Length: 140
Image: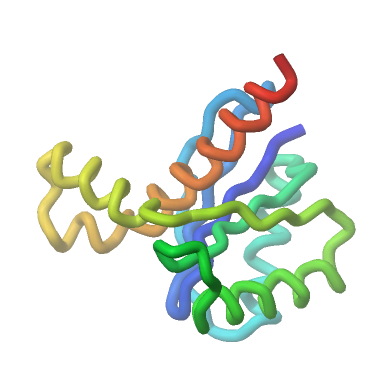
């Protein structure tokens, strides 16, 4: 079974999925947000298509570790999902994931327009890979 990583935002949700062994994260796409129920239906498609057994959602903490308004919105989204999905859902510190994604894309020489299209799914993959690495370190 695979793990899904999400980068939750106001306009989009970046999606990444692990390989079957839970070792690597791959970017899989972006959900253009319209409303919570439509977002849920799109997520259910990914869950079904990839046989997802767990969801990791990036928690946007401030650099000093405190939680701001963005983290509060993320928490509300998590609560919405927990009431509607029968899967474990965990929050994972996502500090600097978008900055790291931006650097990767700049180094790959992607134009600003192309970076804008894929930044959220790359950030989701970074969040998920961070979680997978920590989980795998603990199990060894």
